Length: 355
Image 1: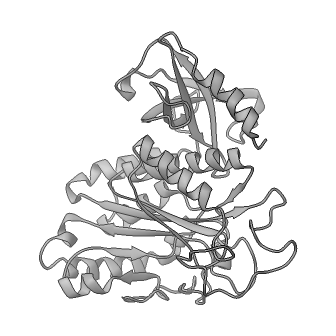
Image 2 (image 1 turned 60 degrees about the vertical axis):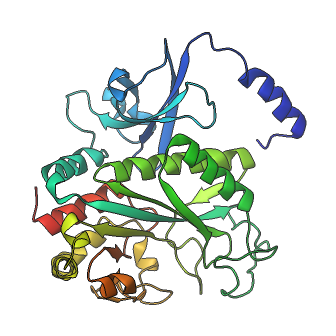
């Protein structure tokens, strides 16, 4: 439902009511198909630490995460953020999913990633993720595109300004502000190459915090778009044809890469990534074969390549990094719908040779 000015005023009348010291905690978790779900729990008082938050549960048979005859899935809080929608002492709570036998749910990719990050904490992995997405109208067609038709060819839309070049900037700006309010480390935004496609960047974050921040930013994006009556698509190739796809470009560095002479460590990492190319592709997102064609600023899904300033490679080493002899690299293979826990986890596993 898109709120009218009158209904917005009516809503604010209730949203400003005194909560009598109680706190609304929105428990957020990841479902079986890479979506986000949430429900609200009333807490008796404000909390200062995630350790103060109680475990909860949900019906896993309704989310594809458990059978109907054993449907309880437990949600354990792992991170919390100020709630930009309810504000005040209210919070957003990111959770891991666990089965009743005390084991991680099969769709809980965070658990293994966190173990890997902890095992190799001395490497000080920093990540920065570039989340691309497409804004769709209620009919599923990209917002602002002619109904059943196509806009002009790519060219004027990337970092564009002006009517006919960019769409839904209001939603993008609202999401940006909401993320900053929530403490998400958004480092920037820009309009992308395909019209109605945008990107925001999160990071740098160390270790498991990267996945936590990116997942909560996705939740906030869906919530903001919901209020505007617009759909968010993380599909890597939402529209067939001569359009850029959508990725989750992953910037990576270790302490060794950031120090003097770090380029040698980056080049050594390339050999390790090449050796496990197909294993990485397997967890780099659904439908990625439609995007990684060797065209539209992508490498081929079939082989691993890298180069300095090469956006047509699997991995790009920024020119400034090559000049400085240290820094980071950008893995351009992950699709926009990839799970950041799986992406960052396998990168740590590959570069460190396992846990």
